[in-house]
Amino acid sequence: MGRAERVILAYSGGVDTSVCIPYLHHEWGVKEVITLAADLGQGDELEPIRLKALKSGATESLVVNATESFIRDYAFAALQANALYENQYPLSTALARPLIAKLLVEAAATYGADAVAHGCTGKGNDQVRFDVSIAALNPRLKVLAPAREWGMSREETIAYGERFGIAAPVKKASPYSIDRNLLGRSIEAGPLEDLEVEPPEEVYLLTRPVADAPDTPEYLEIEFEQGIPTALDQEPLDPVSLVQELNHRAGRHGIGRVDMVENRLVGIKSREVYETPALKVLIQAHRDLESLTLTADITHYKRGIEETYAQLVYNGLWYSPLKPALDAFVSHTQTRVTGTVRLKLFKGNATVVGRRSPYSLYAANLATYGAEDEFDHRAAEGFIYVWGLPTRVWSEKLG
Ligand code: ARG
Image (cartoon, rainbow, N blue to C red; front, top):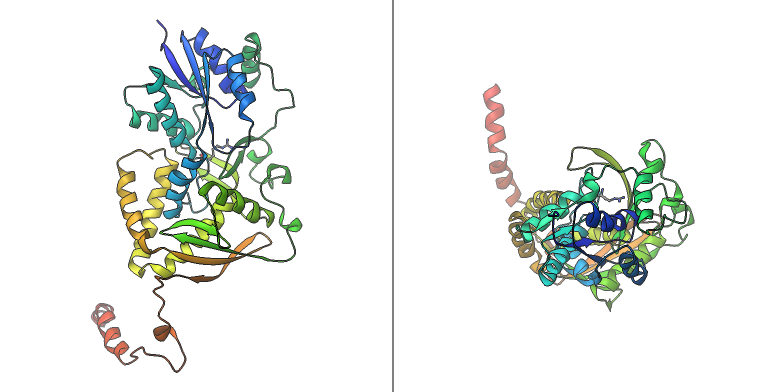
């Protein structure tokens, strides 16, 4: 008896996931391996990937375009929460995992599979995100992770694949490990493992070096409806086109690069380089519109929720019961986050330079220093007396 009869394998077309196919058959006695490649806008051609799975021994090879759901249900939900892991990483890779897990679980139901599989190793966050998401969506499904157990080096993996007709990578393998989707690119390993080495320009693809960015600033207006971006420069755009367009426009100005040492869930510190131009600009603009339309207490309280939200996404808990609870808070806060934010893109920076909203809480008659001022200055005195009372009493006790 093998470990499973019929398996749905998350497939990328790379060496590791390709080798998973014969490995599951021959080492773990799986009868049928059905591969699933998710199109999340990683820019790969999917037809050759579909065929490669079949050539590598898959019984069936599925390709699912999930870009729309990826942006609408995952990226924009995280945007409403201004989710940034450790204040910097907009979770471009992490957000894709629960969606892929959902596609795997759905395919398992459609094809009557008793297990799903992925090619993650035992050192990363992604294995946790897949395993926990799958368990949440269908706790009866088995999860197989061959690369976590096989103990083969890179060379051994390639050699194993060659025995089953899986060609070794033709070009000299890149020293980097790269994950890419519509939201951006994550780059690690190779020369980046030396924390003192500046990321070589070759790691970036979506963002120009600041030195080559245009010498004139570009202005950009982003429109939001209830916390969801809907138009750029007055042109209504569907979620996918909006992110694509914004990646392009902000990327040209060298916006959205991050180089950080982050804390992985498995306890390892790792150095990761990200480029996520659209998300960077969207979060900045969204935050600004919130400052205008939310009360001070909600804005401040939401900061804590945002931090928790980012950790939840990073730590693979998208389908945990905490998520809908946080969502309930976040969506409730978004009902008036409608309006337009104007930004200036220039030399690696996006700067908010203007904003307007039908729900603006900015009261010019209160804020102005001019003659139209309607604020009751004398009321401040009593307010300050009561506000400062506990501190005054405290100090009086000290004598
Ligand atoms: N550190 C990021 C995360 O855990 C990205 C992981 C994938 N990175 C990569 N370069 N393959 O979400």
